[in-house]
Length: 280
Image (cartoon, rainbow, N blue to C red):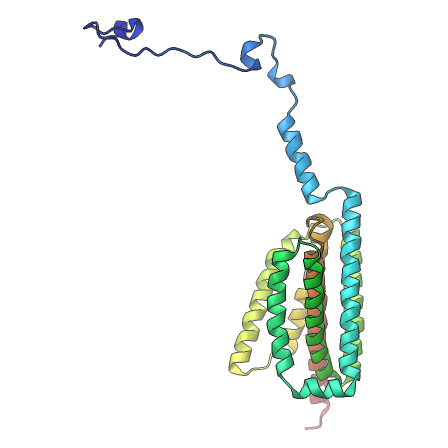
């Protein structure tokens, strides 16, 4: 077979062969000699960016409504937790019962895990998300109330001090984050590593029966103060406006954990002071 046979469609032995033909190109850029590709609007890019902006909620008014909703839910959670904790601490029969029975705490821990998993699955589905959030808040409030009752048994002044310190730290860090233009995204990796190290530390301390003590509580306060900064920044700049339940849970757990570590820190500090003040 020669080049001539390919061009004519016949082989040297007069056997027809397939001949390739060029198909005409279609489209305005090929059919219209005056078509200017650079002058055409980039519709796909505009639509894509508009969709991203709508999904992320970068509109300022939408973001303000979202933030107001998150902090309203958070305020209700904290008020409910305070009421439950105060009742468990001050109501003597409840006070005695939670200190002498372990099963309510065990059940609360299991329910807390189940509810947080359910909340992650239904965080965007109303009213399921709000009902699950109310149940989760009550369970967490009971657990916090149990811990508060145990510390109040020794010194109720520590509990009140921890409440005021938690409120002051949260308000201060929130105002700072709202006024600051710092990008706190760099905190995410450090906080995750720190929290993971603390979990391992607490796990091994539980296995070997060792106390965690002052340093552990101090690290916990630092890490969850960092989480308040980081999560507040996420709420301001990153979270989707539909994720108001997730945002409320994040801040609520940050505050609760900060309060619990402050309790431990203050109690450990008091024990250290008593130890050093005792005569040898």
